[in-house]
Length: 254
Picture (cartoon, rainbow, N blue to C red):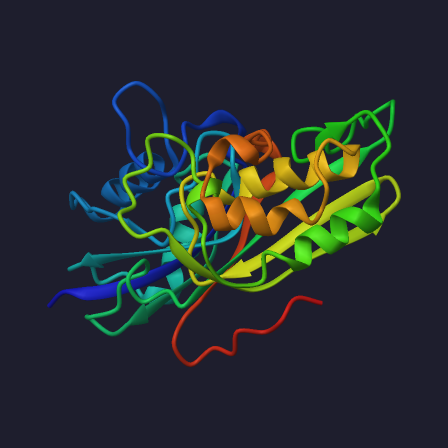
């Protein structure tokens, strides 16, 4: 009898070409599917909640798979951790309803973009923070951040090559946290376009540098013109923090 197993996954994306299996680069999905084959002898396709890009990290990625294995659901975490690289960890495993799908059932996702501000940068944690070597106007950035909240057409905040046909998304909450020298952008929404969070982060950095007025965010959203927004911030500052499912309260960021 087939069972449906849900995994919650943490990973350092530095050495991977993203989540989705590729031909020419190691990926998180590939490592996990190969680990599952070692455990079960089954060729399993793992369904992920989000296809994080090359170099992007996760603390709360979610995936599910079907198996005929008799391994207890709660033991998959320990068993998989024994056969996959140490920069990928299964933090929880459980059996779920057969119709559960990690991507289609997701109600919201929380991403964090991490920066370190100042001329010197950092040594410890440099792989997880984008170094901005100049001072930023945090107040202007906070005003700009608030303008992203709500239901909007985010066409201007998707990268070229996106296959999304619909570009309207709802941002439930977005906020900046300044802990000198660290600056964090937390954003919670029902879904995100290709590179959307990184383009928002790059746009906010431009606001902080004085290259964009915070009031221009409304115009960028209204026109849908990618050229008016800021650059795409590097991938290593981005982390998928949590995915929300039915029955879970979508808590506002604190």
